[in-house]
Length: 142
Length: 198
Image 1 (tube, each protein chain N blue to C red):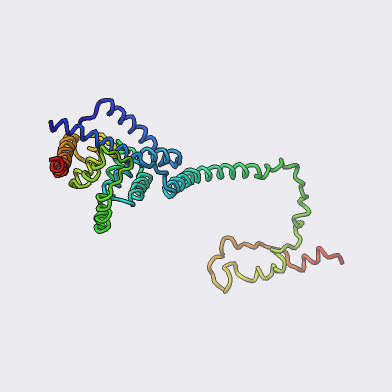
Image 2: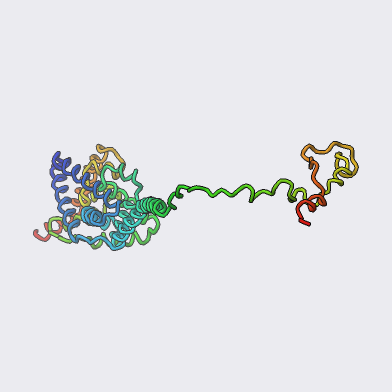
């Protein structure tokens, strides 16, 4: 008997629940819908930013390839300057030997400056050069 | 009072649809959010009102929905029944609110008990909400989740974290206690009626 009463009571509870649940179907609150919209925006940003960065990188690479300088043209024949115009003639005064007097070279020992008797550095071999007077005598016409 | 197999199948299908809606809502689909709200909010709000939330019922349900929205993906994928999860979360939210402001909760519970919201207050169950509200909290919540929120025993087991057989036993005991309470309340009325007749 109690079981039957309990079953009947459960059915009454079901009916009560249906009445309560369907009494006033509420609209979703604006705050909740706003939270969903913000989530959509955040999700788009989260997925869109890397894609945008990748697209920008590709675009930058493409533009960079487009504006890159064209390859240099094939070099043509090089004008050869005559050797005689670039190098002094043999025996002419040069920067290396101008002002150096052969007599001075002979006067100082090859051992170096300052009277040292050490052997001169192997790279210091000025060699005999003509005296400035001789050079002038040969080059300057009388 | 066990669920029929057809009802279980229907509930399983409904769970599947609601899980899909939850995934879409978490992806920011406003239409899915509205659909899920329309499916879950009315019974949950009714449960919250009967459980003592009063005017704060909709706010409590909204908090539950926002928590669903912010649920990490791995947790959301592990949910078997969104309805059961939401009901359990709502029950916890109401319990926390009652603990944090016991005086306000007591006042609102008293308001619900003295003026139960029976919208379609037919004569058949006009006294039921007051009788349910006078039950012990656990029994009251169990009956409300089952009959107002519309959870199955499987979903109740998920929401309350207890085995299905335990839930079924507790439900039978709660219905028996409610019947005894209503019979005890009806007895003086019957005696008074008998006195008037005699």
